[in-house]
Length: 107
Length: 119
Image (cartoon, helix red, strand yellow):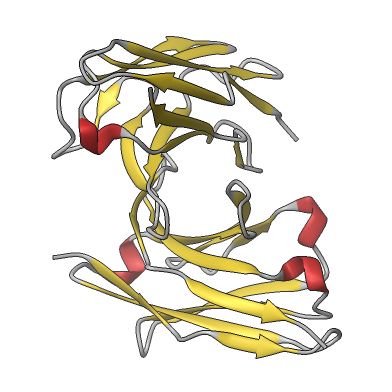
């Protein structure tokens, strides 16, 4: 299976901060990388698909980049509703896998 | 609008089986796949597998092969996930999610079904 490793596992940030989360694949996955946001007790929500495509309805402060093995999710100006856990997911192989998650907490 | 409605919480004893249902609405059921993802308490997301509703083809995570079966009934537009030989570490919230073919991302999710395995 392709292993997905996110960093950091958690971070503390303030409203208005620029936040960057990294996801690294154990082998090249082209641009087959998706990002999800999850709040406690609620199902995950798709943010970004195919590395850099913003899902309909998702605020433009979210952006994704990368290809091959290294990917980034950026929140340009953190808002109160963005405090959540973020997961990457690869869809390159026939066995899909998630990263372990990055929890974004209030500083 | 697209919705995926899942069946209610279940409690099972170790060694038993559970079957969770997922009934989508708001789109053509056969045009998309359904994937199942679970989340143990306080843990991350674990992909379990998916089914192409169009042709019934399935693909399961290696660690669950032999214990999990995913199916889809096009006559009732309902997807199912059955997990057998339950263990305590199968206790989790089980989500179904719509899969968009070719790109394979999960664009709509059910609200989750809590399955508790306890003696």
